[in-house]
Image 1 (cartoon, rainbow, N blue to C red):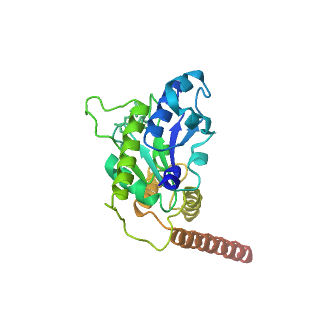
Image 2: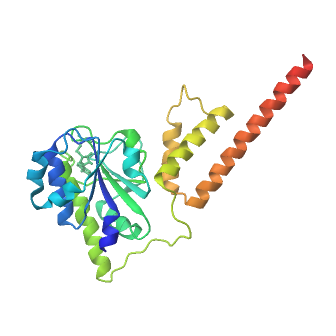
Length: 259
Ligand code: SAH
């Protein structure tokens, strides 16, 4: 269980108040988690964080500070984004309990990141679109935004409950699969490759992108391609690009011939 818990990263994006970082460290340590990653925090390290962490300074000492979200989620096979409100484009959604179960089961296979947003604005749409799932704590609809460390406490609690249930023999299983899921950084490269190919085909206009790539990201988030499927899709895109290149060459040379 210890090894699996270590694979679960709690990621705080652009946190403003160092006190919240300390409170988050305490909240996760209470639930047996230890990995806290900060993306470009406003003020860290800070005595205010140490003060709020109480007995969880060890978690603070081992905090990883990175400058981009991509670094924070690199190597993860599952990325979950937390959100205090419903977004314009709905995404595959988990309840906090389902999130706990999924994290517990998938921690047997790969690293996992759970993302928490800014105190004032949450996560941006672009950040939420990097996630396989979103999770919303169904709080009072008239006052649904929890303090970030409190939100982390709820999610960490559900993860712990799921681990305890599993230990007690109430094993939860998801469909077994023969391949590991595609990793986040490989998916990002795939999206760039896809966008480039669709643009070359004339299907997608980068100057007027509308919601095309957002919807494609959502489609692939639902599907959760495995490593083999991703590699096949990359191969297909490369073949399409080669075909476009050859066709353009032929057109160029026949233009020359007719001149
Ligand atoms: N005003 C912001 C709220 C941010 S609260 C907004 O509307 O998005 C800071 C962070 O705490 C959120 O980004 C999210 O990570 C977490 N959080 C707060 N309330 C939550 C809830 N009800 N469900 C899930 N996460 C929540």
